[in-house]
Length: 338
Image (cartoon, rainbow, N blue to C red; front, side, top):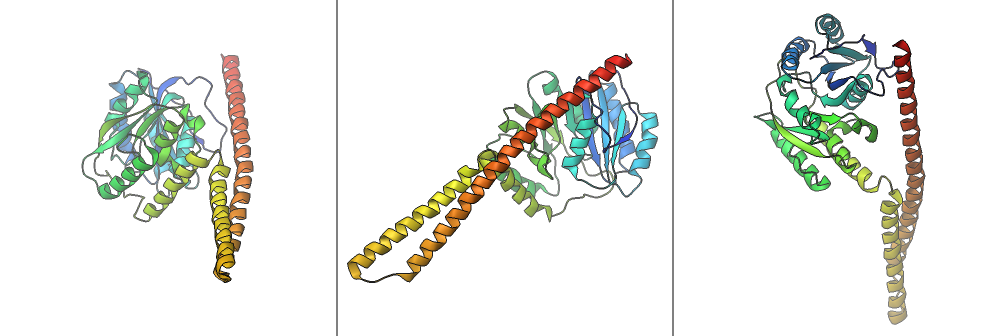
């Protein structure tokens, strides 16, 4: 097997990937203050890669660490040829770190793996093999063993399964996926948790394998109970994106139409009551005015949303075309260098 390297760089630098990746697997490792864990992670990764037939690299994204993570990476790069460190000068979050890793990776298959050693590198081949064999487009692990947030994780996965109809047991876990999946996914903060949902919605096939979970080797978790409300809101945002993102007028127009219908029925009922009894109902006219105003607002919001959706579609096309131009330019430079 071959292990390759490349010079270190910053995330703000131009994209370094070419049209045709030269490796089988790129392991993307977001690292925030993980200086104590990275040496052992690389040692275990080297042992795993040496025993596996595919070609690997590890792209570690230093996400604005305040400890010695970047200095440790520079030292490790001299020892491990498969290591490619990149850096965010400030913390941007896991979703942005994964995108930076993708832009700097050269593998056909990408793997999201944390640096805290709660998941050991020895289990990476079990994630990537179904993809290398052509059986799946994305493979996620489901945790084996006890862990602190098991109750919260169970609720989160239960709600996600019912809301999105995705038949995997653990959405927010280590995962491997074809690199082209990243082209089709919106990378918003914290939406990496829903990568499987978004990919399945695009028609990619998804599988799962059991992955043992271990205690953290060093350091402490970056996530607390305060993340639960954020996760719930993100879940609703993803659901709305998948259900109405392409047709926002469908959602807001239905709500507007429902309010108009309520106002109309209330008005007809009030007129009928007035004709029969000669008594007016002031509260009914207040209801009618409220329904008409809110209905108009919802319709206007839907129309505005349609314009935004159109611009998003055009922006995706422009970004895709730009990526193709950059890839062709990089490939041309490579042929010229040869």
